[in-house]
Length: 242
Length: 373
Image (cartoon, rainbow over the protein chains, first blue to last red):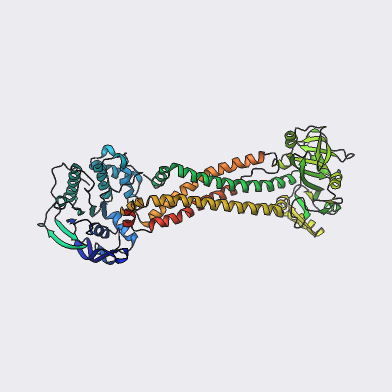
């Protein structure tokens, strides 16, 4: 079985080649694994994350998802819709939609019937502890609540992998712990492949595998013992997810 | 949540901008409806008015520029009458002038021996006696508008006429018309020996085949003249065709303006929401789905504008037809075909105006779009 995500000799240049964000980077991400990508600002962490889920295109090299060399934007869109959930530091919720609709919008075209989409969105939000917040718009939610909505949205279509770019970067400590508890719960219960980009060592330490980037190159790749699962933190995790 | 939720929220997010764009489209569609409707109304009013006395066919000059330019010798009546199947024939001289130097009015003149005089639906007074050529029967609408009664005088073509009758015609044109004896009007217009056209009534009953045969027979008897139905006659008048072409041109201009308004609004919206399109791409929306979203927004804007525009067009037509100068000549005429044309325009304007903004929205990679906050 091929790796879930495979990056082969990736190079990503910007500004006509004057800036090299990633340089000859190769990486394989196995199913069910938890991987953290750490490194200082400007090391290429977010660029790497963008490339592994097709949000950006490499200048050179190949990105394979489940063994397939995906080259079209529509092809990547289909993969992101069904198999990749993405969580951003800035939440990236749509301001004109309420919490439930922000989750539902990810299911448009994937799950037939507005009633089905509505029910699944409400279930996900309820399990994120947001049952009484579903009608509120992002501006009316706290940072932690917004990130939980974003996680619910990322899970909407039952993805194989959850990719999170600094998921706790905009949150206070308490909210950060709650979010990490949710991610740990997901990894343990539904064996979701998890890729975290972070500069927070304590967050990175929750993952089985850690890679460190500096100047667009992998300078460290550490794997904990086989079968390692992310530790659930002291914050109570929400009820189990589907 | 349904496919319309996001487009509607986006439009409601900028209510003033959306309302102004919808208003712009409404004005454009309203202008289209009013221009087309009024020009069709003129044609329809003349067509129905010519047919009201019982005329089925019209004999006129070939290629006449306007209704009143047609010139046919007034000696052709017997030739037409001799055609088998023809029941009644009357020459008619038509002109449009100012009544009492005030409202526009159509003057129609028949010879006093015309059988059409007998069918005039008088509500008061009588038809001209024939002894006096400066007598007239007014349509009820124009009489009321000018506050004229039997016995009053009215100046037509700079000639005082005595009003001897008021008639309640069924058609708008004739309700706003002055019927006068032919001899007087020929003299006033210096058109002795000619009429504008011949109104020809056929023997009842007849069907389309019979009508075509009679029409052919008249054409053969008078090959230099044009024999048409009343509808064809007004439709073939070159002036009406020029008016229609003018209306089309102005309509196309205003519709293009509406299209640009949609494009401008959506371009602004797309520029402001680039980050949102990045989010949609990140959660798996394909470029085609995002394109569809923006086209749908354009369609919603133009559909709302179209609905208001059709209503506005009807109001404009009513208001114009009520003005003193247009009364009886310009009549509202909203046909289903015209409404369909307006709706087709609406359904073309929205998506067409949205195409370029939509392309702008999907040309960036999701990562680039997400960076544009």
